Image (cartoon, rainbow, N blue to C red; front, top):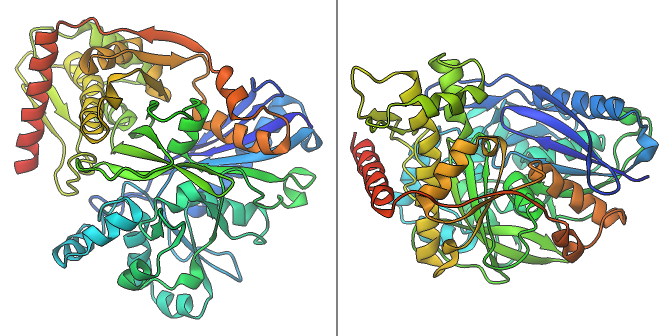
Length: 494
């Protein structure tokens, strides 16, 4: 049993990746699933799509690798965070579609709670802000809206979970209702300082605590899969939210290390060690990982739209057929045009946290076309990353002056990574293995199973593929960033 199966359940697709004994990718299977947008700013997933895509890709990866379930030592799970599910304890049936992390339907609820003066207490305990992004208000909305839900929840008949928790429940045949500390830390109802569900916040949101899962370490025993799924029971030994898994996969174990992941959104994490750092610049204080009951904390900046802006070029504007076309288009763009795209399609995340503003494009001329829009789309990701690093620098001294390790789909674009290095004025390191999120989940499971080395040994194996060094003139860098800041300010006032 020398293989580790990583389940990477993302916002737009589910993937299964098999790693061998030396952490090399043996097989990958991926399946996209439908996004539901029932109202403006609302985003939902069908839980059956989440589960069926996970089941299908795990089986497909095993088949591609030409191995059997008996060869798999353990499973690690990483997942889209904050996405909220509620299901019946007895039947396992969800009471509603999953409400996705991008969803903004609880904006008014958050505004009321802020106006009532509750945000300082919530932030002190959870490290988070009162924003629709997080699970707590989504859960409250489900209990308030779905007929009979609150009564059933109070009777102990309903269970809440983020995607990892739902998958553990399904994989174990309903035997285990558990999550890990990193996912719990994103719910708005978990006290990251005391390490437990917070009764005061649950009371504020009118959430029955009986429906909440048990919280475990990232590398822990989360039960065994049903034997009928893969032909034998397989232990689930690792769980972490996707951004924390990427931090682990980037071997970001030392305080001061930074990583930024570019998927549907963009998420930068700065390891701050054993002490939580309260942000004065509207970043989030969160748990990077937890081993042996001891959390390691991080500052996090969350950007809602990164890779999704390229999907918009493809599916919304239909000016590209494939994401890879953005790089050659950006090269062709007229350098004399200063088109700025603020991709606030579902509001703006850190450090602005405005749920109501929407996307805008500035600087269009009669000559602006697909090339200029593609360039502006890629640049918007670099600008937003600099916003996060500026806030981190203010919160934690010179922390954001060091090297930025990157991963995720967008990092395949040399053009985008060079612009990122140029606009932040710092080196950007792209690793040899870009599957860092899945690798983080695999390492959690594999280290507990005795297949992989400890954290120190794992960190020594991290390998650089390419370093991008800043080459932009400082005056141009400052002028471009100032133009971005003006565009954001204008967007926030509309």
